[in-house]
Length: 201
Image 1 (cartoon, rainbow, N blue to C red):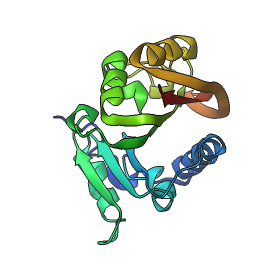
Image 2 (image 1 turned 60 degrees about the vertical axis):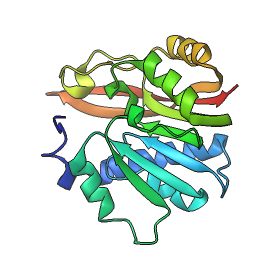
Image 3 (image 1 turned 30 degrees about the vertical axis):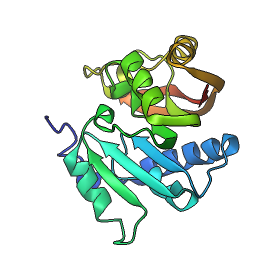
């Protein structure tokens, strides 16, 4: 498995990314109330900028990422008695049906097969489990400087239907933040970020 983030992991935790994850976590916590007995799974956890903010609110957390380099940075932040584990691989590599909360921030657009992923999440989550996704609304590809990635953001109407077909009920899908970035020289573009919260039926 090629590590596309190996050369970026050491410098990943910029103030800009930290602020972006804090805004996402604050919005997520407006819609969910994590419980101390919950087991959580973060998809595309990277260096833990999101998951470490809620680790003390749940009983256990699994940090999944396809980048070993990113997880190595995360492991340096974890205590020996941490209530967490790391999973180097795809989300499909997690097979136990014991998850109460799944969340992902700016990671889903890197996942090629959304429907396969959502059906897998239905298989590893407990009844009533919550899924929280933070990502980009549809954009022209400039966010990643026109690099070939699986999704140039999402149409939340289509994504909502995909969740429904996988066995989830979407409770909200709305814009919560706007990122202003210079991705093309001299041009500032606004990229809308949405949050989607769904419950397993």
